[in-house]
Image (cartoon, rainbow over all chains, first blue to last red; front, side, top):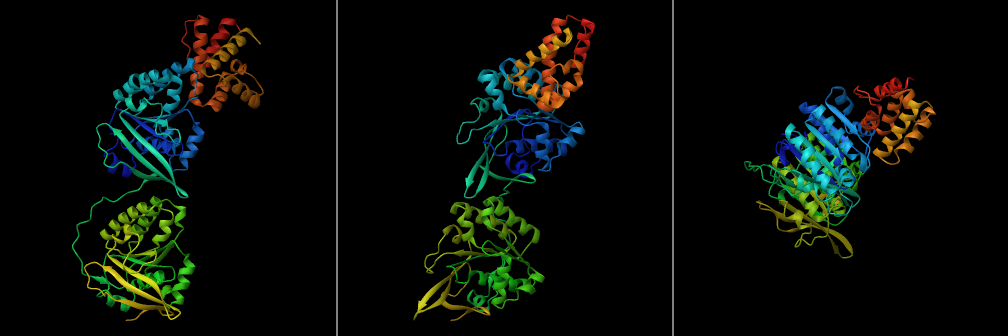
Length: 453
Length: 99
């Protein structure tokens, strides 16, 4: 087995890694991460498993490769000095010299006997050799060597932008596995997807896996297993931070529930959310407020204007995080939220708002992310508020992807009465709870939210 | 240019053409820019020549070129010694031509 050393890949995608003696085609458009994925395979092989590796490149010089990989935390020079790695930088030769180059290459491989080989790229070879000779090279020369040595070779193939064809059309038929790395624009950011349409002696469960390239190399979106944790039920309730609302809900919100606050701008969604995190932080619960709408200073100022003791809460258990969602892919956003949850381990969480996320994610993407987030928060019994900037008449709740997932929906809306604007609210849904069915009037004063009969 | 030097430069030129068209011009420009010399430096100082090629095309491409150069001349020199490097090839040429 040749594990990649990328934990998620080895654990969830190709359990135990590539079968020994495999030729694997890694195809993708420029910028999809083929080199980084393949280099990681060789680097981790040497670093984590003590296996010799060779990287054959027709594109990059050794210096360029070493420098680029060092920025991703991979020191190939160190491995070379330890005798665990060789970078073979070759020029693209003409037809007359290709046989000599192949002979030279095979001699080097035979001498060094690597357990892991990367050929970057097979497309260059195929271009010079033609289809028939490429097949011979892959089957008879490289293929035999790899199988005899129980090694694994990754063959990088360029996939021209905008085409579905991989490489030169024959590589995929003579290899043991095909990995396709895709790269697509998603609003202002890009999304990277791995597909594995073929792999001998392994089963791959999903059709697609999302990944990101960070300063640590390739990181997969570690999607939680799509099953609910078997947990005992709880009847523990926690406060919304607003006494009247707690009463309306029958004594607060069940611990671990998710709440959707939906209403047009100015209805006070963020104020409700601030009540929630501040009150709970002051009761000794760790609280996290993630804002995609406002910077930290504005959130603090707003809380103070509503008479909410935010300074005290921040000294204790409240943490506020703000960032602009457009600067990250949905995967990044999810990973960041998950990292905050894992590091800070909150009991209450606010995501303000889904509207900001939806502006740069497709509805389906957002619903998927919320489902994953829901699995994490449920498993940890984190009580979560989501805000959504949409009109509601209390009969219809927008964005069904979120509204069907949450346990509690609180609708907020304006009501014009005698030439003035009045606010109305209702608990549209509250699972397993005897909640108020009335529409209530409320105001936002210098004491925060005040709810009337 | 001595006879031995002339033979070697010709072999290098042929080897470069065989490996990839255009390499010769690039290598000559590189040698000129860095050493103010031409391909004849391979005869004068094979190690220095190899380093320059390696810097330009990479360590293994330099080795590949070295092998192709040796292949071009090995048969023609008619010696019995096995030649494994440019340095050994230059030595052999010098022995044959008494330079």
